[in-house]
Length: 119
Image (cartoon, rainbow, N blue to C red):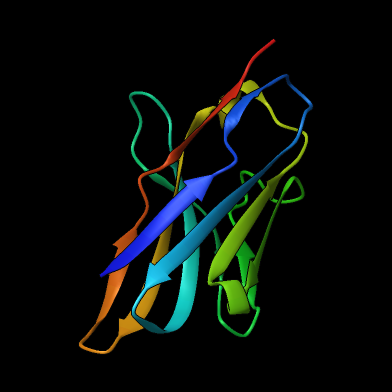
């Protein structure tokens, strides 16, 4: 069994910062790609950022320069640093990971963490 658990969301004022975490646990052999997505009310889920096991990163244009993705391979954890937050960043943020276990390779999702940007 594999679980992804996000944390770090909350209510923050415009211009503020948050650091989201997503830890994978279970019988994991390797994790290649880890992504962050977000879904705002009434909108489709949107890809935000990606990091590979080698540390290569890619960030969506909509958040480039404000959000940073990183990971700790030893802890099977990916982070998303959110800076200069805007009200339009309000969404549920989800992590997704490409994980190989003893029996298969599959894509796993966390349950999401709410980020609300409001004064």
